[in-house]
Length: 430
Image (cartoon, rainbow, N blue to C red; front, side):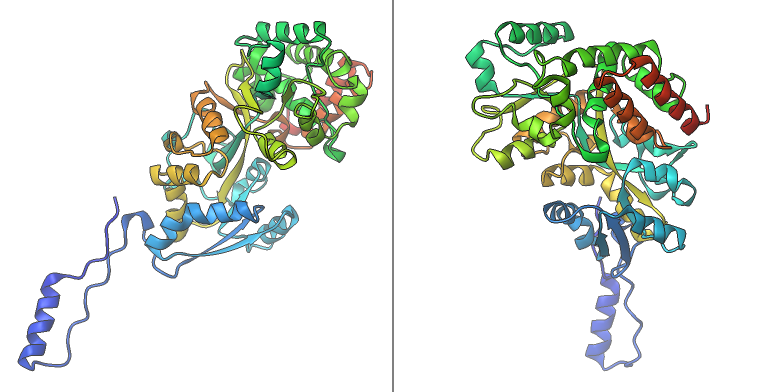
């Protein structure tokens, strides 16, 4: 695919002959160097301004991924790292946005009229796993490229502890329910479901409930909630809440019952499964849980001391992505977008171990054991559905968390769901 710099042999020979014969000193300039195809017309020294939330090791991994493009094309990256989304807002509103921003899915909706379509920048939808790019299509325009993804439809556990009690991994939802009941019968607490997270308390509950949607209803149900064709107080939503509530409110099923679910920090909830002795046997959490576990317990080994399994019976996976959006269509920007959606870009992302890439070409190029296992589930999934609360605009995420917290506090479930459904309808203009 690459082409390398060339100098026309004929001109070289002509210059040598003229010099040898004492010919005229006014010689014709050499032909310009040919731009490698992957550069999309970008020239050495062309600059790309970028804004993202990554720092430290994450930023290093991004640089590792982009190095082949930078080295080949001579593009100059001018990045800025910040956690403050207001900075991005200010620049967009002032008419001086970065060329590229890596941000959240809600910003695609927010900036949709200012973003350049991905397919016009060289990206291909065929490069991505089913469902991955759907949230990036706004008003029939593909304005966002998912780059860094994580899966949520997984349960973390200790193989050592499972073996000690003779527990086997469930392969169906019914087997999971039976395993939970067996643990209770043995006097063990099955779940650690703590969700405290300041103003965002409730998000781990919304993740769990969405995974129950995938088990009981499937991805079309989730997408129906996202587009508003299914109201949030649909009977299928209530069923999922009741299944979740049985486990989240009873101290037989989760650490300290409803009080523990509401007051235990979400990271502390992860660690309770891996303490000695364990306070619980399972925790449903995203892929980032591996980092929480190894930070607290650096001697634990993945696959032996801690591991995960995909929620059995789930039709597809729930997950989240960081999104690339472009405010410019300069050649260097086209080169960057095209590269990240190419085979080379997908493989480079996997090799860097920067979470998961929805680019199908990344499959088979991960090196970290946990990422390899997550990737197997990721690329085999029937569909990839985004987090409902992150995707519906207008404050729905907060309304969803409020419904969960109210329910766990003993509130009326029908009223809680009706309130969230009203916010959903307003946000989506239904």
